[in-house]
Image (tube, one colour):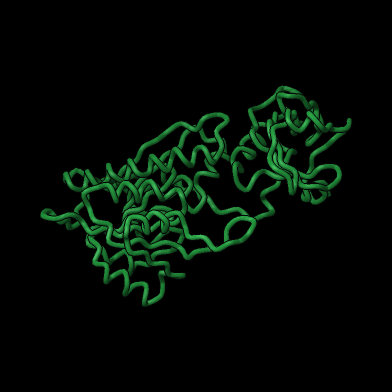
Length: 334
C-alpha cells in the first residue's frame, strides 16, 4: 500500500541552491548539464576514479568528469565514500542538495544526512521495479513494454526511498539497450528539473514505494553473455537486443569460435533444433530457438569488425547444418 505525504525539507528562498552532483557514466551527463544550465550552483562533482578503457587499456576519465572539468567545477574521485576524508570533503562543500545519477557507489546514512534538502536520485525504472545497478538491461531482457525515470529521496536502502517525480516511455519492439539508454538519459534530466521546480513551488510530494512488489536488476557476469537458444524465440530476441551494443550477445560457431549477434529484428515463424541456422541471405540469419526462430542482421567474429550479414555473405558462406551454441550447452544437456 502506497502512502503520499508532502516534501517538507528546508529550502533556501533567497539564493541559488548549492548542489553537489554525484554520477559517473554517459547516462549521467545530460542531468549534470541540466544543472549547470540551471539557476542553481553546482559546487562539486563526485565521480568514480579514472579507469583503463578500450582495447589499449588507457586510463580514461569518466564522462561526468570531462564535463565537470570543462565547466570549471571541482571534481572529487574517492575510491570509497565510506572513508572519513570523503565525509569531511562532502561536508566542506556545504551542499543544500545532492543529486545522484548512476554514481555507482554506496552512500551511507551519514552522507545522506549532510544536505538539508536531502539526496535525490534519478533512477532508470518505474519503482519498485528493477532496483539496482542494471535496470535498463533487465527491462529490455524481460520484454517490458514500458519503462521510465523516477526521482526518489534517498535512504540507506538500495533504491528504497520515497518516489518524488517520474515519467514513463514505451520500449520499442526492436529497441536495443543502447538506444533506450540514450532516451532515458535525456528523460532523466527532464525529470530532475521537474523535481527541482516542484520543490521550489512547494508542490512536491513523497510517495512510499510498494516494497513487496520490488524486483531487482543485478549486474551480469561474463558467464551470462552467451545466448541460450533453448528457449522461446521472443526471449532470445529480447536477450540479443538487451546485450547491444555492449557487451554483445555471444555465441559459438561449430569451430568453437566466438561470434557476437546484433540487430535481432523479431520472431520468425520457423522451427528447427535450438541454434540451427535455418536460412542466411541479405535479410540476415534465421536461427532456430526452442520455439520459433529469430532473424539477426549483423554479426561480429572475434578479432573482426562488426558487419551486416549481407556484407559477410558477399565473400563467405555458411555450410549446411551450421549450428550456433555456447559453452553452457554441455552442462544444459547433461
